[in-house]
Length: 130
Image (cartoon, rainbow, N blue to C red; front, side, top):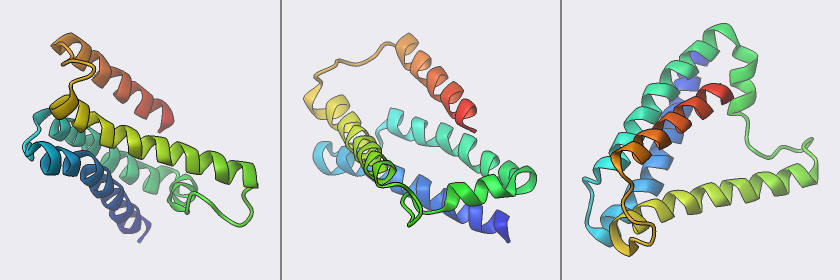
C-alpha cells in the first residue's frame, strides 16, 4: 500500500512541477512543446519514480517522512518559515525558466555543454538527496 501511496504522491509532485514549468511556456510563449522543459520533466520522472519505489521497499520510514506535509505542528516556527521561503523560491524559479528561455531571453540560450552540465549537476544533486 505504501508503494501505491508513494507513487501517487510522486506523480502528484511531478504533475505540479510540470504545470508550473510548462503552463507559463504555453500560455505566454505559445510553446507547449518546449523541448528542454519536457526533457527536464522526463529525466526527473526517470529519477523520481524508481527512487520512490526503492524507498518504499528498503526505507519505508524515510518515504513516509518525505510524504508528510512540509509544515507540521511539531515543527519549529523557524523551520516553517524557511520551508515556505524555499518552496516559494522553487516555484518562482520554475516559472522564470520558461519565461526567460522563450520570452525574455535575459540569460541567453545555454550551449549543449552547459545544458548537459546542468543536467549532470541536477542528477548528482538528486542522487545525493536520495
